[in-house]
Image (tube, rainbow, N blue to C red; front, side):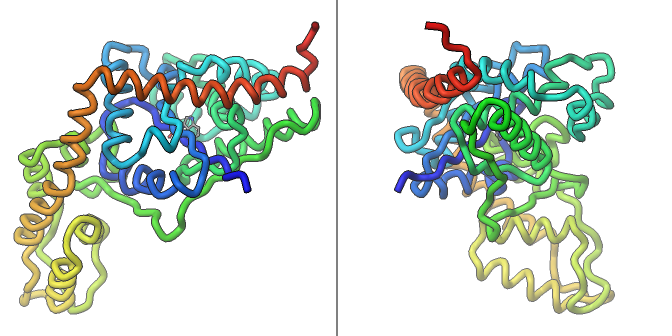
Length: 337
Ligand code: TRP
């Protein structure tokens, strides 16, 4: 049986962090044997919000290197850069004729970005979901590992595909969001304010490129409090987050010890020592991130290797994309000889 096609994209708008790793990359690595996988760096998408492109090249190459350092095998998956696949732009053009101004204006992410950059309401921002649909449909992918915030975009991709199929004939399978349910970990920023972010609140986010010292500093500054007020109390979310992080990188016995300390603590009898917990977490986290950081740096410094990987990814992606485009063109009727 043919393997199902999985596809996901990541915008090169900053440094990859632990949330990217545990929420996405780690799952991609699990998918690479069971599925026919396409993973790409969405550099065109990043132009909708980042007109300053001086850092673009570094970011794109770093994301590629970090993906491999996290365990993606470029011989198993197609790992490529969006702009290396011009077929995506052509499909985007066709899909734009099937996307309506009204629905694009209603997109939650569009409204959110308009609020953030009211002076840059460009058409690329408006049609961001159309480009994302083209990314997916160009490989006729059916499974798209993304977080909750992307579900509306996926629904739009299905709508565009359905309209295409209705108008021109059945060419594009409908894509759905997909994740290993047991494995969806949410990682908050260390100051307890929202999710970790590629570009914001950098002192409360742990990046895959952070060295041991910055990891220790950031974790020691993580938000805590005076401790539980009653035995077996409920953890505030910023404390829960420290336990989550610990369960991801520390030995089970270590986590259990702090769990037990937490549960035995109450006002006036605080057994858990958050300082000790953070020290332990910092060491385990530093040890966890170090090999990823070093491997990513090695790859990034090896221009020959990077070049080969990027070319190989582009070749795989273009082979699949051009097949879809052939079907698309002939379904539309753009085939004159
Ligand atoms: N919009 C996605 C994000 O912000 C990135 C993305 C672009 C993507 N194209 C995609 C994700 C196609 C999945 C499939 O995270």
